[in-house]
Length: 313
Image 1 (cartoon, one colour):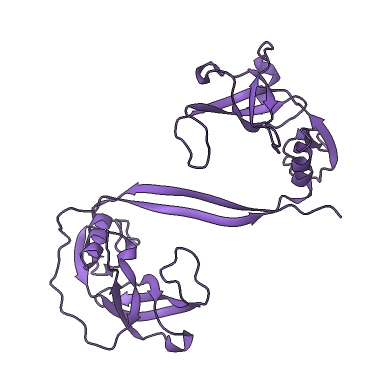
Image 2 (cartoon, rainbow, N blue to C red):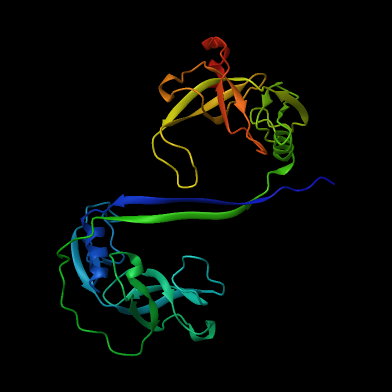
């Protein structure tokens, strides 16, 4: 039985966004230990606040302070916290309707076990020791039996407003390529590129997918393609990736290998980035012990005619 290939993969990037006046005031308020909602035309107070009324789509901008205490409306127990979650010990995810609000806020409740959580229980905000103007300024909620605190009636105007945030996005998973792509990966280890031909339309797909995306039928006939190919289109990369030791600028291209009916992508080297062009003929360059081409370089052949690759753009 062939070995089942699998590998851990991480997709991660920081998402940077600017804030409108409502979200800016809300996050700045959290930094100052003030919770703000936004008032709608029909008198509802929405927390967390939004820029537009979800019912009428009207602009919203009247900010009102609500209490840091509230009531749990529903909950779910998290028995195994993951990286980046609010608490590193088991906790409850709760929807909390803060006093003075008409909608509920999602956050974590620090409590010893699920038997200590119930719908209708009273809770309050536990503020983070260091606050920067983010939802994490609320460290979590905690059970609370006291009175509702008096509010100063803050209008949402602060000095040094928070105008933008950086939200890290990350996905950790284990990838298993399946039969078709496992054969493709194994062929690369011997410096061969193998695709699969559709028995119906006869197109050769590289990398293979195990089925024809056009006809929807299973593919199994293996076909070796390349190693040379044609640049169909490309982009110039000017931002250096943290995990790639490649100096910018460099070119990343779609390359139609000879005999393939689907272009794959690869880096172009051995030529100044501003001389890469559509139709450029290239060949793979392998490093010692590499399991896939490090990059593609010009072959020195004349450029391919546009009509020979236009269907692969």
